[in-house]
Length: 522
Image 1 (cartoon, rainbow, N blue to C red):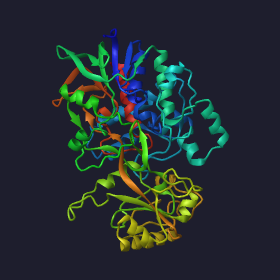
Image 2 (image 1 turned 180 degrees about the vertical axis):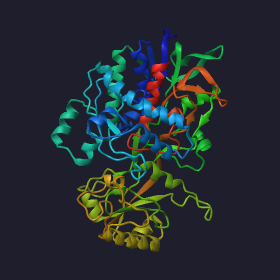
Image 3 (image 1 turned 180 degrees about the horizontal axis):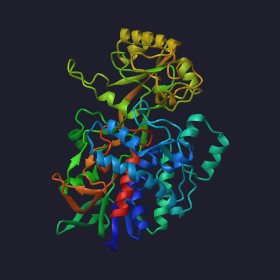
């Protein structure tokens, strides 16, 4: 079977793929989107949906100030000089244009999240650069709506509502009306807009190979047949974090605990490599601290969940097998996640794997921990004991190390200052703290038994190394020449932020911007 020809084929339906499709369709191009799973939305659909966009119109309308020069200064520091400054400049110039386009060409509307960049003390840092979609009530074909992936673990609330709390009646009403929020909202709005412009979606249709003619990519062969694309093919198939061979090859020593859908197996990366593409940033991922609940699954694979706020709230610490803290628990999840990858040449090991979140009865009775509410009893997978030595014995970690660490940390909690890791010392760290706790919203004692522990895994929200591209998304060979007709965006393409993560939405910011520029220029 062969589908009719189209202008542009997009492989993958996450935020990058849908944005590229929307931009191209807005110019009158005919677009076909192939998705190998039964659901549209990819990793974006189960994400928080934040988009880091400096100097944008939404933040300015909310009273936040910004300048291009400040954003580029901040990004140059973040990327450690490893990224061409012109690439960063292009992102800063184009990202605000992308956001404005998205509001003009879809029913999505955004609000500016009142939170700082992840390194608020750096020159050029600002608050308000992160935007998030407002709750979205879709107006689309019911069959299409049913194909949209969403995170069943998230309540239909924005990140701000989730942090501050919202009346249960509002949540019940949104569920009844099937209103989507966060990443699911972004995907619903994009899919609706694409459909209105005539883009076609084919699900359960995996790509098998790219078609070339005289060195130009002219189409694809999928499980249902071949399709020719006059303007080219866009690879937007996500990262390779669920492909054990690729992880072993490019992330040696990394114990993979991806939070993304299991379909991210590096399909686009393998297609690009076979076509002669170059790669970059392959040893990096969107790192995070994570946890797993036994028997929980997503699409038939172990479900991994991000751990964020539990690490910043007062009365918890994260320790390694020596019973020692090893990082500022309130730092950004990407930066914190990199601490798991520290290698100790003396012991010839990764000393921070495994790690545990340690907390006491007071903490558990006050805050949700690893999806367990304060009123729920500790589940069987949450280790608990009447004393710290007994807890350490159950975990197999140093009793003396844990006792000394907790004692030292408790003195910090009383003083309101953490001289070891500066937890809660800046406005970013305090964002997820408890504003009603003093003197430091992130520091509280661990003193009242029983004591609890949850294993913390070195997780990732996707890989961030991939195919080398131009700022317009054209795939490049190792020598810098372009592969005609072949484009890439999203996590299949190398991140322009290198090791760094600028703020809330720091992955979707460049992904959506790159996809927009690709779709407008293809």
